[in-house]
Length: 489
Figure 1 (spheres, rainbow, N blue to C red):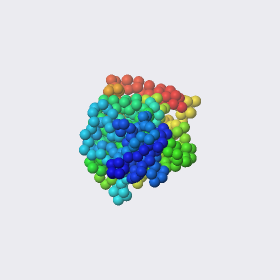
Figure 2: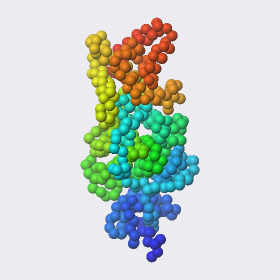
Figure 3: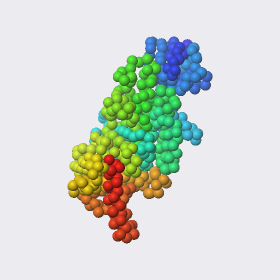
Figure 4: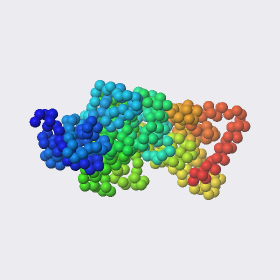
């Protein structure tokens, strides 16, 4: 038997997307890629060794047309992804094939998606803040450079807009690249995101990788590793900071759960795969910072039935350094980005990392907003007149803080007509501190809504045509505090 013939086996079982094959010699290794079908269109990844001659694998493509007794070839290699600057501005599937109808990519190199995480000696040991230029995130839920942040939000609260803005700021401020990975994405959402990023002008510094909802679980399970392999090239070879956006990390766990059941493995608690912790760690541990550059990840996280004790949520939380919660209530009030300041948090928000001043301002903002939430019931029932002088001041500060934490985005200029703003961390802290010190108590809330630096409120106030108009706005502002307070409660 020649070496070429020894790489061929025979299909012995086909159950959905699980394929078993028997090899007479040279049994393929775990994660090896097997090719079957008349034109080699069926790809199978080896998952288990059943005995010394039989392997069981998960199909990465539909198995239509595959029959028992058909020949199957061991390629001797694992799944590989194209890497290089040629991938920028393009859209790929799990195999590294373009799906944007712009022709193939002539990448000089392809790398295995199964790569080990950087060793401890290669990682940076100091915690560093990753500034986004978005006030609500930088002040209250600062991201870690080389860390992982969870983005919790349903449909229609501005998640896609926030992701697009983060990509825009990454390109503009950090001179890095962005990689978007859609795991279990709907085709419609992927197409919309692609079009929005193209219109916003950020596509040329972005790579998009999709494993869509209609594809086999094996494909959805590996698409995250394909995107991560592309990101590692820019971090390790080009020494550029990379922003990796994953939507949705729960779909990765779900795909692994489907595969585990199909492969015949005994499920653990609530039906999840027994290897969930190690599979998630293999993906998450590769997202880190080195001495030269970092991969910073923002991951959308779906919580099943809003149960934070679900094993998928628990294992995901253990890897996150920041949690950003988007509130539908805030979005309905027009407060964009709709980041909930009381539910969002970050492990970086400690005096040792961000400094005493930043920590103190963030804590005071939370105390003020929490007090306002408690007073909303009283305002709804009795009105503002029944509040004490100190409580009224708290309400005025909270409402001005809420509006100052809004921000016009560059990627929404064509819809809102307002030029985008990117605010440095120092300017954001300065604005919050001055509002807490009642420096802007005489300004209307409208002056603080959708601005960048806090001094822009003065420019807005100067645009008033006359002092009488200013008094009129102030009166309307006081009336809106009564009515909005009741509605909010």
